[in-house]
Length: 383
Ligand SMILES: Cc1cc2nc3c(=O)[nH]c(=O)nc-3n(C[C@H](O)[C@H](O)[C@H](O)COP(=O)(O)OP(=O)(O)OC[C@H]3O[C@@H](n4cnc5c(N)ncnc54)[C@H](O)[C@@H]3O)c2cc1C
Image (tube, rainbow, N blue to C red; front, side, top):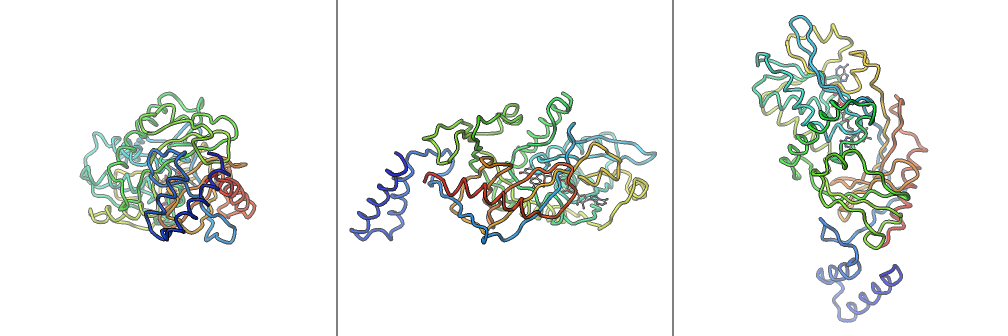
């Protein structure tokens, strides 16, 4: 069925239903939907595709976050300083939300052989909070020391697709790192599934990768296929997107604001404490009373631990009001980094990957490009 046939069918159906006085009934609406969309089979959702209505005058906020990126991958290791141990857990690039529980589990494993008593966690982003919770479950008494509360961390900016992407550069990272990455991905995926639901802001969603040339299979889809369901390359008649290539997967989306608040509450309910503190150097950190200290400072590790490899990758996001009808997300299909993620309270439009850019200021031309790229996709959706 082509576009004009669909539109003719829509008019015929509405006319017929109108003449029998049935247009206002709910069942009539779903009948119309199923007639109009029967050619787009969906693995997860039972509703038709709808297009988010994107317009410049709908923008409610624009935000920026700096991803803590290291080409050779994130750091989980223990360093001894006299009587103190510092265990690092930082540098997760564009995949820290996805990797959090798994990377933090690896960090907590580093305590093997140490007496379980009091631990300090520096940082209250997603790595700090998940490390703190896992330590509590293992019997530690934990205090989180942090410059910013979770709401003001990079983690609260993250888009939240469960896809450990842009975490390292293939060929630069070692094979040992790749094993660590896969282990962390699997553990984390399992942990998120156990928490799935509105309470923690986690749900499964159809993901559509869009491209005007063949879509290169990402490392995580190639190496961790068991973590993604309903994976398929779709033919043009199988999807409504105005591009030549579409790949589909189903994975989780994690809403950081809900998730971070909930894990913070779990931490407090389990007896954890917060202290606001900005550390300026290693001696400052070693002056803490706790002998076991976790470094979960993300990009802060560059200055604190002189990690020259750590670099910011600036990402900008644009938000418009929510639309409960949108039950899928898209990645790609624009002139630069482009994505659309529906959330309970807003629609997120992305994005950008600006390497080595330390500015936290949103840029008007990036906003304009994000809106334009997403409009081009959704104004031309074949529905
Ligand atoms: C635009 C954007 C989109 C993204 N999308 C996704 C996605 O879809 N999926 C995904 O998995 N990931 C995504 N990410 C990546 C993810 O958000 C990060 O990898 C992750 O948030 C890093 O978490 P973190 O806890 O290590 O760092 P942060 O969240 O930065 O937390 C660091 C903490 O350390 C504290 N700190 C730092 N320095 C000091 C100091 N000197 N003294 C005291 N405290 C200090 C900070 O105050 C903060 O509390 C995205 C990121 C961005 C920016």
